[in-house]
Image (cartoon, rainbow, N blue to C red; front, side):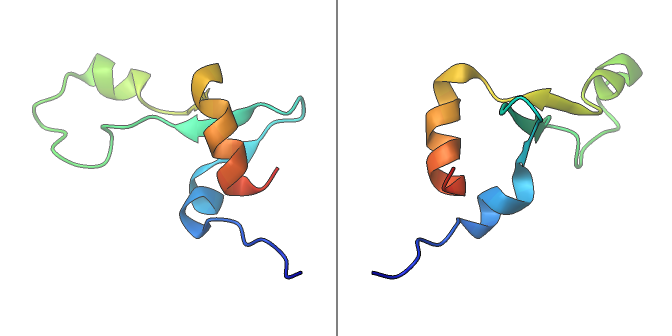
Length: 64
């Protein structure tokens, strides 16, 4: 039986932490930034953890 391929889009968007949680980037930070407040843009910078209700689906896409 052949190997199961990882979803290429998910592979680029998610990273695993050392404890097994999944990190992701915030949305709404790529374009149309002129109408957003500086505080909002600053808070969207950096990584956050995927919510536990979505973890199962992301792990299926990453074949974890």
